[in-house]
Image 1 (cartoon, helix red, strand yellow):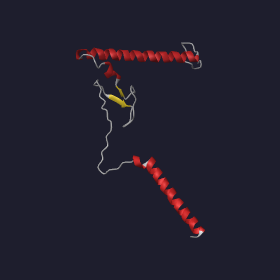
Image 2 (cartoon, rainbow, N blue to C red):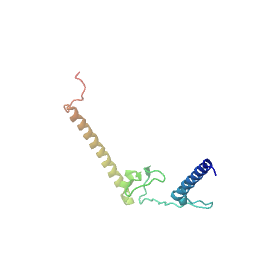
Image 3 (cartoon, helix red, strand yellow):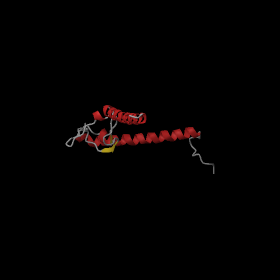
Image 4 (tube, one colour):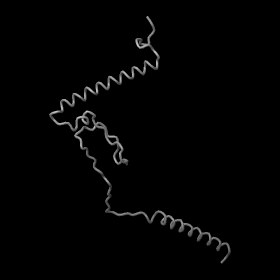
Length: 134
């Protein structure tokens, strides 16, 4: 056999051997872990979340299939329903009134505090509005 033919045969066999080695390496690293079937089913973990309050959900803070950590906030509910959730039915009117009074008082205190902060940062006398004198 001529030397040139031997060299070509060696190159062809080396290329075929290299292709076979690459295919084997792919099967070894990836292919042997793949499964296929025509009649399979998927199983997933679904946890039902239920509230112990009869409150209306205002906002859902997670998406479908989102991973959540322990203690993470999932939903926002109406605060007035939480405040009166465990009140006896005969006391519900009084509890609702008390909640509304405290909410309004808190709003008034918040407005007063923000106005005081504005006045202190502007360094204006308490009786002025900040406009030029007429």
